[in-house]
Length: 80
Image 1 (tube, helix red, strand yellow):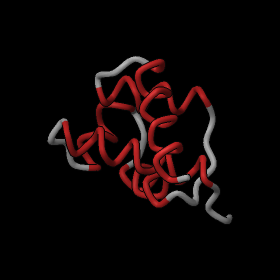
Image 2: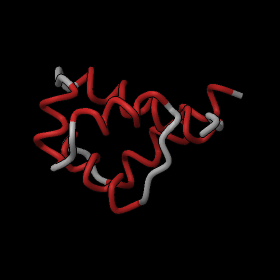
Image 3: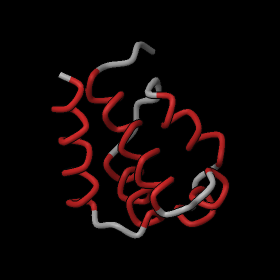
């Protein structure tokens, strides 16, 4: 699946937040109830996802879905 600006921004936001929290992909996976492979694919920017799954990722990162969404929007604007 091709990378879109929104997927790229989402990938960058997940990676940036995960790294700022000092989490490995495996730790984020455990905290969000997802697999480490799924987190890797999400961070690649080539994986489409749902709001439900993004909410789980946000909770795993310890941020609200609103905070996560704002981070994605900033990353998307930065990429333009």
